[in-house]
Image (cartoon, rainbow, N blue to C red; front, side, top):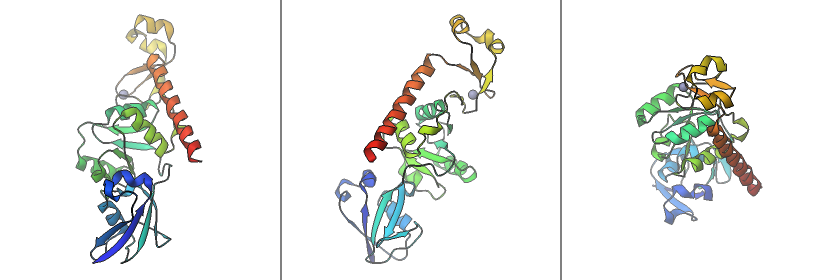
Length: 243
Ligand SMILES: [Zn+2]
């Protein structure tokens, strides 16, 4: 039996039982086990882990610690490792709609089960968003994030912050219903589908080529723009505090 000593930075304490926060954790283990396996056995998915040092030296998650090693674990730094395309676990429909409002490609279906999600990720490099830390621990999950909040607006702020998305926001670019990119369409082409007041007050329209939904800059877009503004403002406020 070997023992390694883990110090996790405060941002990762939410994954630990209360009695293991703010202390060095002595973890006993048998044989050769990777840092990924040992850190996940503490409750922290590998997708949440940034730099790891063993006795002061940076190490990859596949390296194998030895008896008496002291291991420091930092959280993943803000930033987007791949193009920001997401896969959302079931029960995250409102977050999917918010992210689509901001123009981000989000696969979401409330029938997704764990094996279905793993299958999608095996063939399509996407960032998995979920509250299920066990799902994030699967090997097939290369990129992901464990949402802390239960509230969709807070979850949106978390995602924008973690993946540094504030500069990539593009409203009215993606269908809220089916995720397909929108295309501009002339008013004449959709005129017979518009309510009388919409015909009078709006001239710019977008159409989803996949599900035929029409979009225009109505009051829902104003609400969306306020939401975006609050996300961006809170994001920069947090960055300022971090400095
Ligand atoms: Zn659509």
